[in-house]
Amino acid sequence: MSREADRRRAGRALDAANFFLADVRDGLGPYLAIYLLTVQQWDEARIGLVMSVATVAGILAQAPAGALVDATRAKRVLMSGAAILVTTTSLLLPLLHGFWPVATAQAVAHAAGTVFPPALAAVSLGVFGHHAFTGRIGRNETFNHAGNATAAAVAGGGAYLLGPTVVFYLLAVMSVASLLSIVCIPGVAIDHELARGLHGQEQDQESRQGSHQGTQAEQPAGFAILLTCRPLLIFAACVMLFHLSNAAMLPLVGQKLALQDKNLGTSLMSACIVAAQIVMAPMAMLVGARADHWGHKRFFLASLVILPIRGALYTLSDSPAWLVGVQLLDGVGAGIFGAIFPVIVADLMRNTGRFNVAQGAVTAAQNIGAALSTSLAGLVVVKAGYSAAFLTLGAIAALGVLVCALALPETRDGANPTATPLDRRAIAA
Image (cartoon, rainbow, N blue to C red; front, side, top):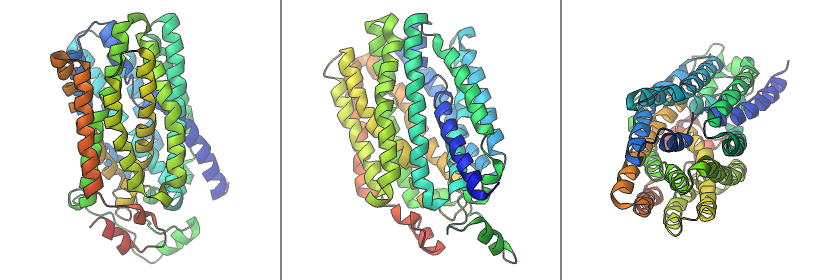
């Protein structure tokens, strides 16, 4: 089978993997808060704490997961094992009672889930190369959002008929489908050196093999680059502020909806997710199609600007229709963020060989923000109410807008296939 045929087959398998892993990669996600609130009858502060414990486990696993993806050639096996682990620990939740059993299971699920983002991005880069990477990531995110919307719609309808525990059965089905999709990615289509960010200039398979004969292979940069690349550190700070603001918003909306109608809480949460995912898919497509032309920073800044607006609008009404409507803005911000995130990291880490560990390190910063977000929001709700929590989260996002606008440089030049390795390294200087 030709290289081009392998690439087409890999593209179709990646489409399916992103679709089915959408429901698997985050485990129970926002449904966890509703389940603990309505079925196990926990209060908001305790829910926020258990979600923070799980997120801390994810923080600790992010950089090692990225380094493992950089180092291993068994990327498909790694993703399959992670999918099995996330699903198993999530399905055990109805059998667990008490804070620490639930927290431990969710911590394991979050740690295993850290494998998926860098592994999917690495396979995409290893198959399609830098010149097509932005478009491929946009396509990945489009299928991811389509999978999330489908899963949320099924969960909402199933929860209305069968109760909130239907999300556990849906997770099991999506996990099996995701495993089959991962297996269908042809291993021979993945250039594992390119997948970690080496081979900065686009070359076909034959020319790469020829260039390696009689020459010294490229070597990865030291891990110190994660601390010495100033734009990467600024980007990590912006990402942390994004999720410090964003992570708690949807769980808070879900809790407000569940308190209004316990029986409809999961179904209304699904409506929020579907509304956002419907918008995220075209936003991801837009990033894939236009980010290389309009600028990567411009798209990232737009994703940050949405958050203060969203936080303020949530305070204007408790109507389920209003809350679901405002959730459409989450589709704009998160849709752009998910697609532009690996593109900017790939810009900054081009020719360093540390693409995936850098993704892990920045995602660790992201998860620090998410962990603090849920705990902070839970405490503010208990002390001052939901409106105060939404306004607090919006103010944090406004700070992120300022940092991004004033300190983060445009990274788009790093994707220029005509630039020399020295030119590309200058972006990280």
